[in-house]
Image: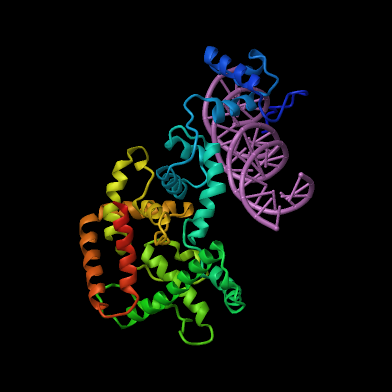
Length: 348
DNA sequence: AAGTCCATCAACCGCCCGCGA
DNA sequence: CTCGCGGGCGGTTGATGGACT
């Protein structure tokens, strides 16, 4: 089907609107409604194409448009909705009264995207950025340290370095985590060796790569996401650990949040709320909520609700059991549990 | 003061979809 | 069923103004 010509008329004005044009457009619409946008310019005595008129009206002149800075609440909502809907700006705009899709899109591209990146979250997938990114930054990071660039660090550098350091710390945590899993006799139905994969052997010269792979796999496990297939590693056996994240205290409390927003409840998995909350904190999300994972998230959520009570209690017990196993460790579970608690506390 | 860089956002472009003939 | 049209959407551009050198 051929594209319909829109502004093919010669001599139609383009570019910024003048106050006179705005006035004409507003007065016409107030009196007659917009009707057919194509006919509007002629009827309103405007030398513009209908499309341009529609855009001007919906994005700028409409009386119910809210101008001014986005509130934190709006920011959170946008981030969340984006994690659910992706770049469906118009759909997102319908949930934010008074904001236009264009405005939200611009705000996303100029502010929120950067904000998430700074937090180490991929704005596209809403997942933590891979540690490969960090490793690729490592040489420059170390060079910067060695060269004494830190003597007068900019805030920008400081933030980056802090974020990178945090990510590296997490690799260590993950390493600790897997060690704990391997030595623990917890009742979790997880096979650490299957997590590790046959090729993994800590301590050899491929340690970093292995750790990264391990990190990703563990993230997936902790997330309860199905994203393992995204990795180049062969799929591993299904893990009952999916219950863990689905039913952690974070998610229990998030359901309350979910209930507050009836308008969007239908499309929002509990998982994605966690994403918003963690995304707005300095703690990167442990929850997968990327648009491409929405389906799986929803499915998970569905299964979650089906097994709510039993799964919930078992996972709580698992948490307690795990915590019990690690009372005297210096890092690892406590950190992770504290992170989750931290998110939890900041939820309410 | 002038030049350059960068962030912001209004506006445009081109594609897609739904609907009616 | 096909086609054409109108409207809507997401991506991109470019003008503008402020910050920085």
